[in-house]
Image 1: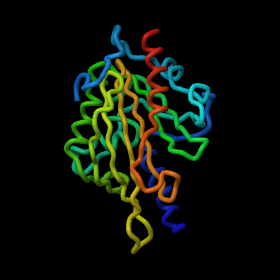
Image 2 (image 1 turned 90 degrees about the horizontal axis):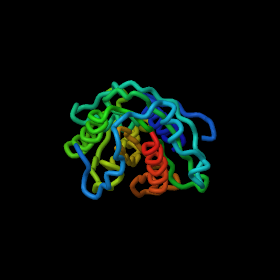
Image 3 (image 1 turned 120 degrees about the vertical axis):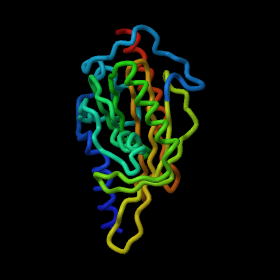
Length: 243
């Protein structure tokens, strides 16, 4: 099983490598869906890179987690899926989208209590593109059940659109399972993933999480901790109101 676990670690790294490189850092559908408060208000001006970095939560904001800086690129993601209609889900797994951002900031959250962690990006867009990011991901999650990440060669199944969590101005939540190949002749290792994307004004926040087989998450579905989402959205809301 040691070889399979090593192969899985490579699979997870490849999933994220299209957009990010993690390391220690500074202390660091269209329209609103049902239940959305529409909290952004004000003029729809994208936040700058500096403003995004200041709006990203740090270990001071979020107790019980180590918060690491995660390098990002503002360019659109270029990975593709087969079938092509599932491509927005592949992009979301890499914490990106098919739309170029004006700025992007990233963080990785590691639980100090061996609980679930997450990765996150904040992406500034024009209002039209920010809305399209959420809409494209929701449509893909509705249409796709299984697909392959063409560049990485990983297969995914059991894609399921979750009930709208009601975050921000628009949000979408989905779960899916990666089939990570083990050694020759072994069955693929099933790795549960969760993705939550939220639009707050012109900023899109993309969260993702997964369960490592044999880890603290057990055999249940992957979940992005609600405390991470709510803490980040609260700080982003303050930054958006102050701009």
